[in-house]
Length: 336
Ligand code: ATP
Ligand code: MG
Image (cartoon, rainbow, N blue to C red; front, side, top):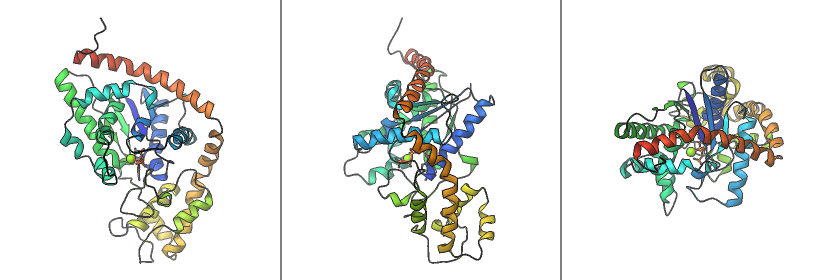
């Protein structure tokens, strides 16, 4: 039975990259589920992943609520999808342990996310190293078949596929091999507004590098105005040689539905400086309804917790049979 699983870390304000790379697809899968294509859509705020890099407890707690509110504001419907907090379902770290026993150190060290994030830290926590195993557990615990993620997560999901195959080979057919679902099949990776060679990222300290879904119109204009481009003034799309301006065109295209080519043709008489205002306008309009909804939801933490509670119950119901099967196959935790 086709099941969709994906997660997002409460490591900061959700940004346009998360939205266009992942969340927008989540909503589309939810619509397709309504039409009968999937049995379940399971979406998680993965707080155990967030603590793989140092977090302030107050900020983390706020970010958890904000992530839930943002997902709801973007159109995740808790009656259609299962929306829950990872740490509310203790089977995630339990399955992670079992899968960790099938993983090897060189495999983990090669994954790009680890390499990028560990570079910035003096001492690398074990959790940062092993977190792809937990990510695999997140997916396999629901026997998910489809995993909609952004392009930066492809190698991690491939690792989850590998673990599923390895488990199946050793213990007999247990897990589906989850398919990686990339936005429209195209490489949708939004870049940092400050360092276009990097991806837009929640955990990057410089908030000017990203556009948050709840940034005010003024902040959006300011950030785009200050975004790094290059010394050519024409607006042309060439991600290889002109990553900065091409990223703006990509953002504009995603917000307006026009292709990059259509955009470049229609702004021929603008230089990049003036073009930035066109992009900002498109972003402001696109985010306006989400922002309004989100500000409302943030006033209702009790409501957000209720939604998570309902989601947790459903998540536990789906995951228990899978976990019991794993225990039986491995020979741990005998229950009869
Ligand atoms: P962090 O910096 O803490 O890792 P993040 O911005 O990478 O945060 P995640 O919670 O790790 O966000 O990822 C959530 C989803 O958003 C994933 O599916 C990921 O692939 C996608 N995503 C993250 N950044 C981008 C981006 N710049 N462009 C497209 N998709 C992205
Ligand atoms: Mg990430």
